Image 1: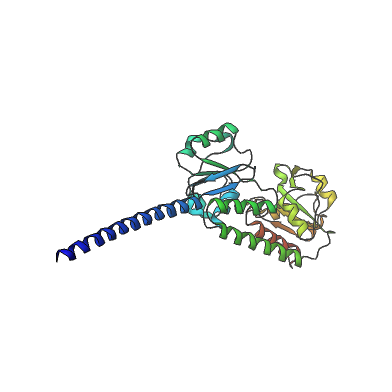
Image 2: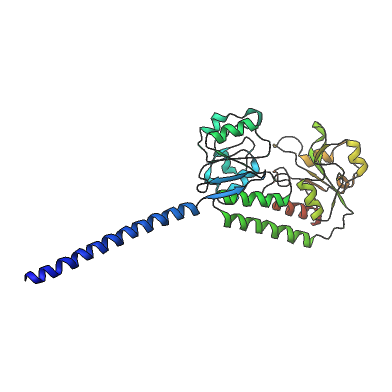
Length: 318
């Protein structure tokens, strides 16, 4: 019996040592695995000002000062991460429930910091360098999203998708937009002989139009029509006489309508001296008052579809 005990004890001791070693190695492996997962969750992006930004993990709390970035967040399924929005962020409707923060000259840094965001999304030059420095010193990562053409919108979607850990949704959204644009371009058979006038400010407040290097101009070209103010760079003030002289085949206005008085289309149709404009004679006036063609966001594809239907569809636009 004594011999048996003497034989068992060394075996048990060895077993305990092996078990302890195994447990230790398992704990170490688990710690290493957790560290690897934490490292792999880190996000590094280059924003649209060429600034490299690194987050330990995808953003959980975001303040977006621009309406386009708010739209993108909701479109990729990250709207629930938005804790603050700029004054002009108005789509989709649920964004209006998010606390509003001031921006530009009226920016209140303390107001933003009180929302405890991980990330502040803003457009180029929306804030001063001093304001950006104060935010970053407080631990908020400032990311610039600034699209000036459709390709830039794709970049903005992918940038925000990476920040939010929504890369797949972002890629799918970009793919849907590309498919829409490609399909419309393939169907459009215009040769550029017909012209469109984009009215971004009505006669009452002084006429302004969208010229070259705008989304409206880019989409008009895509659809085979010519922007009759393509010689204007960006947004520019024009005269009533210039519009009458250029005699557009189509008019697109983005004037808001609040339900009282004549609609924007009716107001254009009633303008003295405009009765001989081709677009007026043919009632080819389209009101797009929901930023479908002016905001660097996913709904540009919707705006392109509406413009295509207006140009190539049958009947009046009203």
